[in-house]
Length: 335
Length: 208
Image (cartoon, rainbow over all chains, first blue to last red; front, side):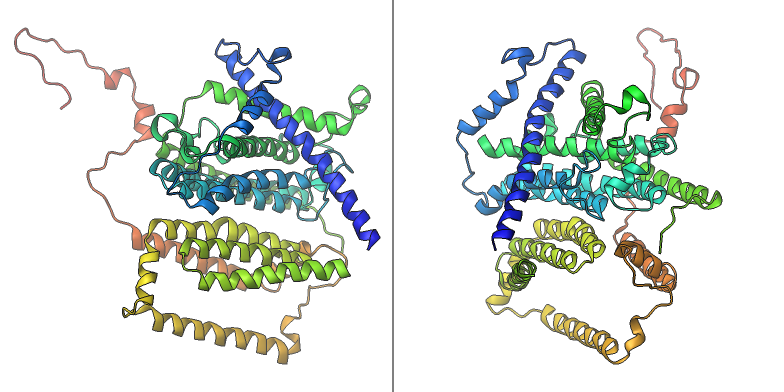
């Protein structure tokens, strides 16, 4: 029994080692997001609390903690409380399989990419639950919009993942990274990378696809009735999801923890640092896009997802498969 | 081994409890949430027996897509009202249909399990080699060789169901303004701008 407890203790230690950096980096990333947003629009952004305003998010979080949590009288209490918890848990749970280097991963499972895909497709529940349980019109409309949007874009993300998996021949995330040792998939699969990036924007409800929380139409979408810590949890889950999408993009297309080239000054930089650089690069693109593009109309959003991305990625899948088959480059299974 | 069985009983108790709650709970929304919990714990059981691919697919397809649709239907339609009418004794035509369908499903399950029990080589396959390759690979090797016909047929059946659903709900609406991207992009100053001499006190008719 002692043995099991020891293993349990070790695992909890490891989990804390994954969770704390993610929570801290979520706080930092929110600051970065607002800062980039401000700089693009020739504003300063948060710059008062701490050096360069670095502690702004911590101050915000502190404020949320001390605010009163208001539960609407006609809300379904259980589901209302459950919704932010579901959102945040799902956003954090997905980090278990993200490899920061060959060995630095909490769970090196065989079906890592499927796990990521499953967890990100569950993310829609937090939103539907929150919108429905609030028992109010705007949150419900926001939740329905957001659910339809997330389900639509998940389809094209799934097909893009299949594209990459065809080239790799394994569902393990470390194998996916190692398969890109010669060539990052962003080069042969560049159109897929672009579509993945745009779908990731839609999947995380970021501008230009932030229809669920379009202020002018729906107040704040599904989070309208939330306050205090519960709102903060939604918001934390949202940003953890954005980071997760960036990590997924860098693993699938940018070679994960691999250096750009395996030459002297580049390969002494430790692997986790490369991973962080790539995640930050993708996040910077996310932040820039938030600042420079106007919001899509809902029918345009649906058209883009179903009529353009889905057929295009399907055709590209057939192309990739034919190319690999014709040049005999399909990954082999050792039996 | 003890830990393994603790986990097994944990997930199976949750699975059984939530499946009972699905059919007994009064609120339909709660039923759907318990259904989701049921799917998740069955997925965990799949993973525990080493079928990680099936477990993940269960999560993606059933929890990530099908249950979302259920939730939508339950939230949009007033299912609860109809369910209440059963308890206060109104006659319902759904119960006999439901009974017939469930008896049919039971018979089908019996046939499947029976065939599996009495014909040992039902599950055998020429390409299935038990080795240490991951079960995702094994599944792929079997599904795309021996069972490719059934696999493709299942796909065609699903496609048919989708086309049928679209056909049933499709209605052509007249008088709806539609944005045509090709027209928008292809029009230039020559085709869209017209100069008109406006006579004073007469005006001009535009947009005809």
